[in-house]
Length: 438
Image (cartoon, rainbow, N blue to C red; front, side, top):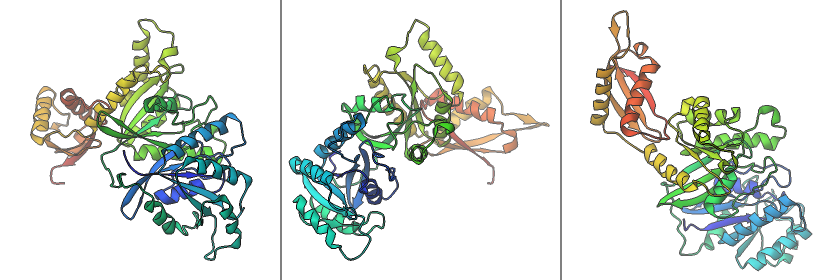
């Protein structure tokens, strides 16, 4: 995607994530008065006056800190800065200019990018005299805003779109497929995305809970455009202590709601867990395409039966998504990552597959001839005809004589007959039963 990129940068707790949420129109980044809450780069799409752009939120920069997490945050922020066409340098108008602001400003000056100085947390219509000290940064007159109160946002966006390069695409693209990676913490979701993207897009450490937000990345594969969404792993309730962790769970479920496809990443060293079953169950119930990626396969002790036994265990524990393809991968060695990407294309095609009414009824009539619908007290169920009413996911309406006679096991039989002809690998099939005359 050759879309203009706007990056939000600044020290911790100046309101970057609040501004990010304001600009994209929904709560994506977690906002808490806790330094370091935003750890990775977080992507979304913003729009102003009909112009669309990619917006990136970054972790708070503290140049003097040398701990592992801050080192990773600085690396992520630098990648975002290098990618950006326009940088929003956010400072705290209430706290005033700090030494860290000066250091961040020095980093931004060296970038050579267009920088807009944004003075946040000014909730009054009159500009306080204190903000003039920010001229010391040498970045011109600051735009005064309150991200929390939505004051000055229009003026800021007017300035932002002035800096968009002429060769950048500003139209919206509805063909992008959203793929959300789900699973328990430390299963390797971020590592898989990083391998695919070929860069350290997401912070990966062995510190539990490194990913807290749901984080978007753009990727193109075989002419299909995707947005990859990394999510915080769902923990058991007793393991959720702080507010930020609770927000992470909400973000994960929201990311599934907004997804087209979900990739359940399973830790091969642990197998299927209760958390895996719950999160993929939520995706199934909401009609999402599903792929199961068993990660860390490179470090599993294997013999000629290991693969089949692991697959059998998955099918046993996740019987409600037997339609989901399974791929055994390694984010470290790249084992079968290309197969995972090919499966994304296959499942996306199935997610959009439409069957003509004539062909569908040929399948149904043949199925009824082989196995009659249930009967009760001499009255037999009848399927008059069926039709597909939607895709993403595929949904079929069956017109019948009596809903009480149509047991769910028979509907499952009809589903299996449809799958025998068209596959629908990775895709849940939904049915709606209507009695004649409804």
